[in-house]
Image (cartoon, rainbow, N blue to C red; front, side):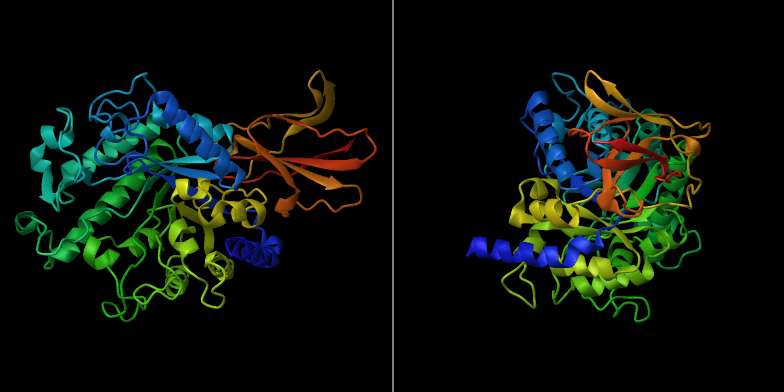
Length: 496
């Protein structure tokens, strides 16, 4: 029965998706550390595990990795401000042995594979429930007055200017020292509500209400101020580093906001986490938004179809990517055909949405383990062809110059296509990657067709698949800048 279901799934997928391949699409995957997947492992074992995941994700079509580097005011990178994470070494403050820098290593590995690397931080969570010992260098030890306890956690108080300054200092340090492509924060702002427990910040509100009469509005303003400041901090240091947020999947329910809410009945960003995500999107304080729509189609409290249409309508001022639960998707049956899961139906909703520019998969290991054949279907159907990153003209829209001196040369390593780096002075003019296309004799050169892409590379060469020299092909090379703006084409005809 399992084999029959897999066959039916693949058959349906091929029939609906091969013809709708997109040339530009964010195809991300979250790699988290808080599940303890690295604890108790040697440096070599962690690197081996991550290398395997990246190889599989690359083959499955993923073009961006969102890697958790700061789960509780700690670090999976070399920091002079915060201690090494216990989620890496088992003890907060202990450096890895043999020594390595996971963030730098991941940047190198992702860029080598043509993937972006977004550093994922948790800005306000200072201690998770499971942490029992803290390093003397931890902010909760050095500045206990910046912290409040809640639900077994420690939270950096969003009301304090000192915590905003501190978070921005941490992020500025990452952006200044590492060649990250993005900074990413998820859904933890004010803490998720715990029954019977109040957030202990009323005295701060009464001491400095800043004109607000409602503590909820005041809390939202605290977070708004931080988001705006963090955006400015990132782009002042490096304008090309993308600032993304992945909020909880419900902004507001209709019963709270009949005009702008969704027909849902769950926890709300605006009212419960004090995160006014639409304000951030519409004011341009974030560069992309990836709401976590982890539910199934038909869910009574939070229907996936209702929510993707809601976000598509309301959050179009910045690129919109959908946070997708791999496990819940493959475990839920299609409402029209119980013999298959909901992957085809969700994909169809993505294609129908006018403003959805990509997907972020929760979580990477579910894909690399090929849960429910999810990775196999990506590789053979949905993400069979490569994709460039979505454009962000609000950051930079000028394309680089085209590659120079494209030529095919016989070498001791075979028949190689070489080109020279185009001229460019400012950051937005410099080529960072190249796209290589191949077209058969008589075939129209159409760089809008991703099926014709044979490589997206940072190299200035490409090994040609020579086979007796009987067939004529046209190869096209274009340049990409940091924002994936694509140059005009440079073409050459070769016999393979």
